[in-house]
Image 1 (cartoon, helix red, strand yellow):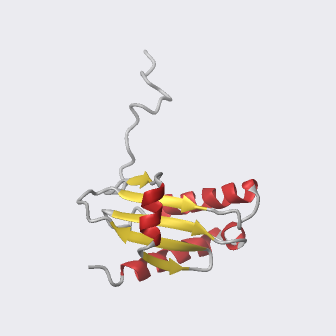
Image 2 (cartoon, one colour):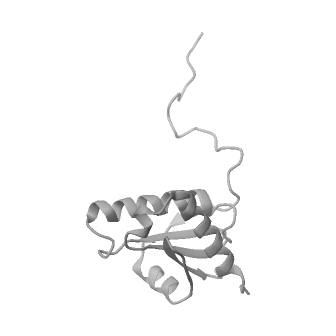
Length: 135
């Protein structure tokens, strides 16, 4: 019996069957963050959501994360961004609209200390509010 090839390697691994129809991309350019900041926004107890419709015809959903020095030292800022990344990975694929940019901005103390289940509820509420008046 021969061992299966590529065992443990991620290059040929199959995608999960319940994968989302849209792909999540991480925003890196400052100009994209500035455009999202001037578009729609919805504040919650755990974070601020900024969203904008790019209207460029692509299906990619872009996500950005911001944690300023108001959050605290580097350890707290990184913890806040890790929580926001996990929140986006879990909460956006089913409800995010293709061709939109979303920026999650951490709030001092709240993003790090708020229970994760409450952050999930905040995200669902913020997304409904942002998309309520979409064109």
